[in-house]
Length: 176
Image (cartoon, rainbow, N blue to C red; front, top):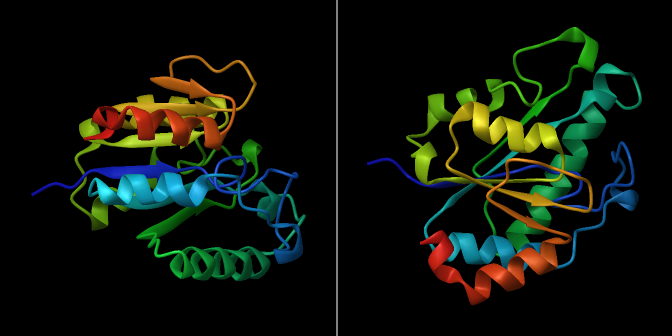
């Protein structure tokens, strides 16, 4: 049987986006993210991170530094009772025109090659147009745009993760 998934961007969704975050000292979880993830887990969703990390391709930080921060992130989420099934990332700079950089579907395709995902009944949360375009391109049924930028095509839009969490708690029928 196929399972529903929540695909999450990292910077700007899970953590505050300070620009090319790669040091643990710079990593700050967004307000309400733990509660939001628990809400999706309580509805039976599998959680996945899909993140463009062009800072690796641009030489701002190494893959090793990214993986160290990812380990910190996953361990901290586990302390909160939150399991991320898999983290997919694109290390390429935009000019490399790879298959994995959002809005291309490579990261979602890799996840779907390991898991039986019901994309039509899954969600994606992102803070950039490329995230919402990924949801469309990969046929993920619902998407949530976070932040104040103009993003088109999202199912729902909120200024903050906390606003999103509050809305979905009050309207739990949206994610059943």
